[in-house]
Image 1 (cartoon, rainbow, N blue to C red):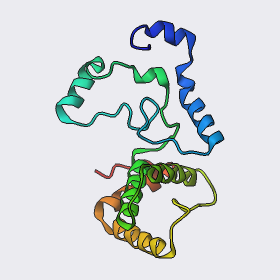
Image 2: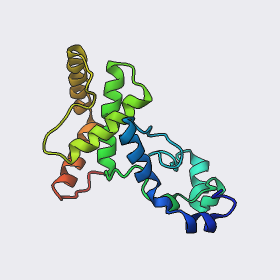
Image 3: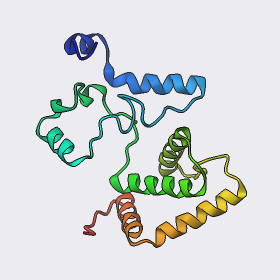
Length: 168
């Protein structure tokens, strides 16, 4: 309907509230909303391939029949690039420990974000066995030892402390 008559739909509905309504319903029925959900998902309007991304930059209508701005911020998770990289690294480390379902990934992303904004840190996945917790801690140590992760950590620390430096 949005594609056929964008102005009618925007006049009738506040599309920027779609994610809030989705979250409200998800909380009420106690389910996690997948990060790859159409329109409201974290990756719904992400483009990465070379020529494809270049075409989007030149003319977004080339591949986007729906304007992402109509829907506001998809996930409502305000994270820096460095924090997103940290979260991704944690997902990769967890995937090395055990097989992850899409729902597990959603829980990790949401818990990581919660931990960024909370005084008390909660585990990324509540149902980890003792063995999995130990293996995850080891994988995190391995990642912290890698030069790229050290750079990400220092960028995240600088951002958290309000100091922005160039580590290029």
